[in-house]
Image (cartoon, rainbow, N blue to C red; front, side, top):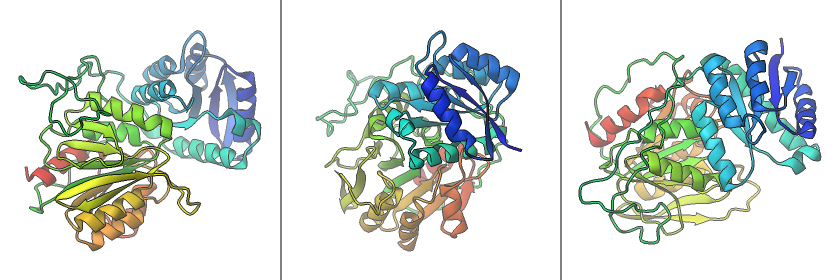
Length: 391
């Protein structure tokens, strides 16, 4: 039986093209369309689709508010379409925070030209989300106050893109920033990490793709300000999105988060997000490590940024003094980089299948015998803190 899809967009052309593309897959059936957010909510409740594709900018009720209402009334797997702008990125991150599971850039030219690659990617994403429909229910209650990073001696906010990055000023936090929404339909078993191994670390490395923005936010907002090692983050994301995502994390987290720039010196208590469309590698020595960020035009490299490339470089600089975590994501990026790290003595963890939006990347390292343990998303932050800080 085919998965049922509801297409939501105020453009009749886009509704028609998406419907044609999705209906080419025998496993998918577009059962209806909606022209605005209010209609989307009504049809989500009455038709109970398996997946909804959702535009953001629409009349009457926008996509973000529609997602909120759908997740409250009829939780459904939702794929957002977003413009490749900074504002589009911010809106998409809000939609993910509200309960949407994934997003795709809204590229009219590819849709209009009937791009085989674009159509194949869309069908693949929708199929993946349809399989996760049982675990999309999330809490509609937000924690309105973000963790306060300020100390009595701090008087200013250190910008994530500041040229005075070496300064150690702490940051003020926007009191209205919302924390991530938690999954409520997934049972959370106790963390397998009962106590720290006693191993010493110089770096925490995290790689992820589909479902990663929510997963990273869930983990990083729990990391304490005095975290003893630097963190590198590799999230498959368009170039227009990573700056907005880093800024969002920076506002929500106790640690400092920035979009990585070429020459950044790795410092404890800071997280560095690889820029979309580029590669990020670790260079130097473990006691004087820095980042190199560069353009990569190689057709042999699928992902930009690539978890494999970043993790592989970390293995060369830090050897076994790395804790690496592979989170939810499609594909197998991170497997070979994790293999390199493990060969040097590093520890590799993976997110478990039940809590993943897409169990691709974690499955790749687990099936290859590279990961040491699998953890539910809700347990990962606590496990990291225990292991790295020996708590």
